[in-house]
Image (cartoon, rainbow, N blue to C red):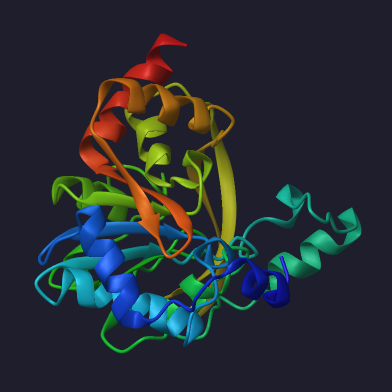
Length: 266
């Protein structure tokens, strides 16, 4: 959607203060630990754009809480996995040998929109060290959440997702569906229903840049929307609007546990 269409659909501009009020009305409180997924276009036109959206989220949870956003870099992966678009097979070895290693400061977050890329650059934001599936956090538990992100089983029980789960974080979906809910990947590990396979990515180790292979599971988001709808039927999900965006707020722990049980039944 173009910015012109976003303006046409907006009756008034969002501001930092108006978005903060919307977040509070939805049920977000000072001290909350919050894992967020946002569609900027769904919000409506916002004064200050993504910078203002991030500030409103920070103002809502305050420094007593924690704001957590995925800052993945999927292009730092094995070129044999690339589908959209694929690259010629004869390029694969060159790509593996020359791709710059993951760097917390330099490596951009891609394919997730402008908000995660801006968030990782904000002052006092910590980014976990994972070449493909980094997660960033700001606030009281930011250092704890992003520390010691294990390379293998990248979104499993030694990842920032598990730490957010342990903190009893809330999940906030702003203008997006359950198919974007990264925490359901944690459920895939807990359910132990996915096939294992080997990923690859460039990392820095002992002062050198190397291509490292590691064990992981095959993610499958196909059922995430259905899982979310089934979760809504039996659990507390708060519905409301943030700006113009239909939004949902719910317990990470409850939803991850529910999804793991759901996957085990399939």
